[in-house]
Amino acid sequence: MKVSVFVSPKQGVLDPAGQATLGSLKSLGFDEVSDVRIGKYITMRLEGVDAEQAEARVQEMCERLLANPIIEDFKVEIEG
Image 1 (tube, rainbow, N blue to C red):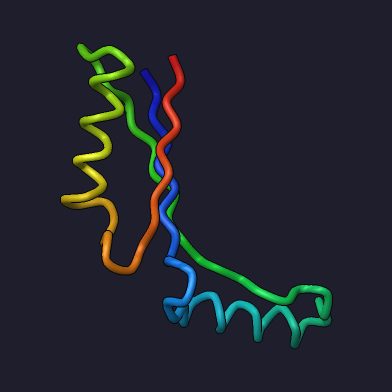
Image 2 (image 1 turned 180 degrees about the horizontal axis):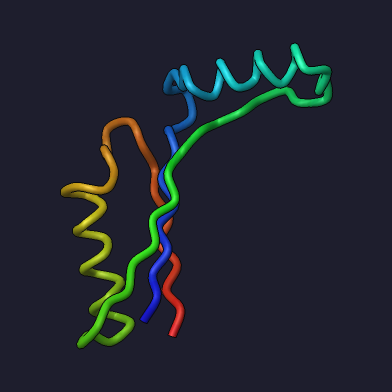
């Protein structure tokens, strides 16, 4: 089954990459942009587990390695 993980900085946490991108977009004339948050998008394939097991395993992967739960939020989507 295919798994997608979206990791982003928590609201209120400084996002230097997002702020730099916002500044660059504004300097290029994209004045309608008011906020930019930069995160990570991770895809993986899991085998030998059902959807419930996959959810639990990916949750653990995120908490232990893929995201920093102190400063980042994550969302998991499972297909198949």
